[in-house]
Amino acid sequence: MRKSKRLDKIPPYLFVKIEEKKAELVKKGIDVIDFGIGDPDLPTPEHIISKMREVLPTTEAENYPTSKGEPLFRKAVADWYKKRFNVLLDPATEVCALIGSKEGLAHLPLAFVDPGDVTLVPDPSYPVYKISTILAGGEPYLIPLVPDLKKIPANIVKRAKLLYINYPNNPTAAVAEKDFFEQCVNFCRENNILLVSDLAYSEMGYDGYKPISVLEIPGAKEVTIEFHSLSKTYNMTGWRIGMAVGNKDAVSALATIKSNIDSGVFKAIQLAAITALSSSQDCVAQNNLFFQERRDVLYDGLSSLGFKLPKPKATFYMWVPVPKGETSASFTEKLLDKCGILVVPGSGYGPSGEGYVRFAFTIPKERIKLAIKRLKDANLHS
Ligand SMILES: Cc1ncc(COP(=O)(O)O)c(C=O)c1O
Image (cartoon, helix red, strand yellow):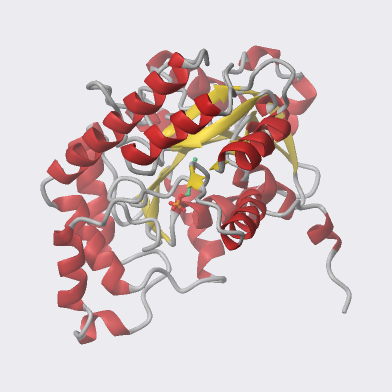
């Protein structure tokens, strides 16, 4: 068996290693408090599940779906974008269903990146942008999370095909405002680059904060494809459904790749997703109150131990600087070995993530309180 050289270029997926480490400890009988992968522990709202139950036995659900998505799903996405962001989308040409946004993000470079092309990837960031660029034969060029776009060397800009942005941000929980998005849109228009906006966390805002879509910027649709997902909004990570929207040529190019690789999302899931998008969004507000309470418990606890960080306005992540003398890896290991606390080393998201660890507050607040107690008892102060 001779594997491809491509395979050698990709490190093991960050969470595979972390899950292995956790399994090892659990096997030893250790009660691991898991702040690792960002997977909501709250249930999918009942009205979405009951729609799924209703359509499962019907013939409507059982055949091959179209890889671009059912027309009614695409319309529900367009209606939701209009209601939520006041962005108009043509469901026929500007919306494509995805098997989770990770799938779409991972396939996008196959439609845009040739060997030798560059993609502009924030450092730190969700690892899929970088790896999918490499899989397509391209070169990720790392830029700061809040880049000064004018400082990117001209020869790099010339070779760049994609600029990735992700606000609210994983792993840092940073948020961005309209003027930054305007700069990105102008930069992409001037340099003939596709702006790739990953909006997976737009519905997880706290204290009244409501993230915006890049597509709200006038003219953005000329240069932007935006990725979204029902995963985090409705506690549906395992259902695998998301959407790509925006520039019709970009959406169509992605759909061409997809139509040769997958056959779309199970129709019953698309029908349940229509219910999620078109029903009352009270369940989302309710969810956010849960996460906001957990955020406060974790933030207050870490602050009381001397950790200094901004209070996240969105996402369920906390980006925590490690104590002096530690690295991301050494602190992650110490947390696991001394406290049974699992976090993700910031360095896994890029070199600029060194010096941080990421906590995902996707566990009950009692467990968060227990983690703070363990930290205090182990004297792991900042
Ligand atoms: C920034 C970001 N984008 C995309 C995704 C993918 O989400 P999904 O494939 O479940 O839609 C994630 C998942 O953690 C994420 O953090």
